[in-house]
Length: 114
Length: 115
Image 1 (cartoon, chains in turn purple, yellow):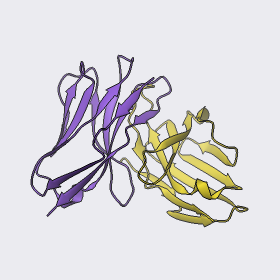
Image 2: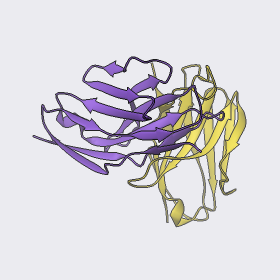
Image 3: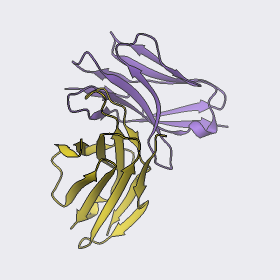
Image 4: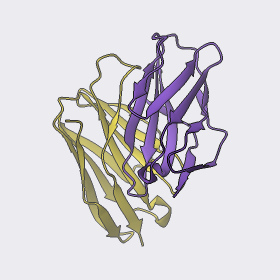
């Protein structure tokens, strides 16, 4: 069975600082994608960044980057120069099953302090 | 453009009512999804349509009835719901380039309250 674990229910960061959200996963698939989604209080699930498992290079999107450790099955999200608008629930997700459905972690609630 | 639209934004209904949720995408995606999300929880998959055919039904009660009239539209028909069905209902779509390694794009959701 595929699983995704986010061990940090809540995190807090000072504005302009850097924060790292953790995610570990388990899958028997060799070809899969990993995602970080952001869900602000407005509730829309927004794709932040994705990583293809067969790519060794870590994905980056502006202030967002990942540390993908395939052997350790770890996929952390680093947010640099944190902004007030980054405050949200962040979900780590895995897509690798034959059915194509996403497996979500329980989420990490990020607060940004001014 | 990675936009998925959902209507209505909010819906309040009684347990005897019949209502429908609507989802639309114009990205040419061939897979569409319905999720249910309770407060402070991750989304739970309900249904998946691939090429307009129902491919996954996660043992959802029959009071929820999905429909995919065409490749751009996805409906969720609601009938005789229970108060515990109150939740945020999210729609998503994906290109389906390769099953199992697809990126899903979500709509803004419909907040449903069942009285």
